[in-house]
Length: 478
Image (cartoon, rainbow, N blue to C red; front, side):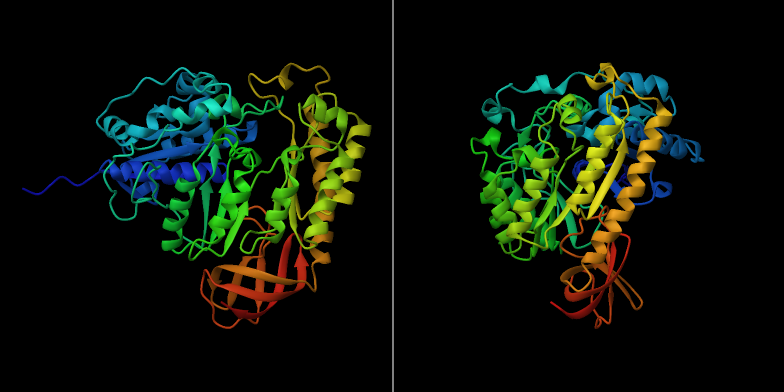
């Protein structure tokens, strides 16, 4: 008797690199549970939309994606919402979005294959009632060790089929949905900070570091799959290790990751300026294979605004940190995001931010307009600015940033760069230099490169720039 053909599932991922890892882990669990993942929703029996719930624009994009997939189907293929938006709003989202055949929160992930199979059979599961996930773990980070097994297999779980990672537990289960020489690696999840504008800790939970051995095992698996650059992601990377009893554990882990056979680059994301330590700066600037790349979450530069945000620092301290970084590594890459239009932000505050950005010489800056987020302290603050004023400030900030980023790229003309090749299309070769993070920091087009392949590292000299993008003349590949 011929066994039944397994159902197919497509994953559509929205949001940040942390969601990319979540989708890989969902794909791993689906395949471990007997389903098959496919790339094209039109070829799938069911579609999972891994939503983003960070800010208003991202939430709207997630809802629109679900609606488009639901409206575009010409059969009864279910569309299932998972991810941050689904976790954050649960039953409320299900009621407002009946086009979704199911809304599943994070607690559905361990048995996601069974959940999808049930929806394919016609079941319409009741969506969860959201809760503050910070309350699921002890308040003291050191007391969380015994609870660190969420979304993981047991230590005695059997080996996984080929292509699922890693081959021994305890571990998350992961199937890479996208190839290429760069892969995100989740270093930790959750956040203990209480920024007044951010709701992420309530639905992502308290901060939990992954044990170093687990991270290293995943790094070795990725290297065997052709990955040459690891992009370490979390909600707050500089806190890594505090719940494992060593706040400087990151400084020990980074060189070990760089020593993994096949890995040439290790890149960090989302560093809190207030938590940057001299030792961490030293490791990032002086460790072979660890990139001098600083994704610093400044958010603003005016001290009064930062205090209302429940953050630390000011323009002077931030510039001092940048001086420290560039004193150790003059060519270091630095990027950041800032919020304009925060409640109470004055014209003087905005001017302080603009003067800081002009002095900081950042490679890339994202400018976001403030929006109220449900349940946050900032939504209750006085001094709320009109929406049109916030839009004006975003346009003003974005215009300034475009000019400053272009100037910073022009300063790099003449520099020697190492480019990781990510695309070869005919005679065109495109990749990223050390100061360019995946997806958000621009790219480098190589001129005069000998025949190269995706994944090769090419030494080159920068000859020109367009915005944040560079043009460089290649020397050779390795």
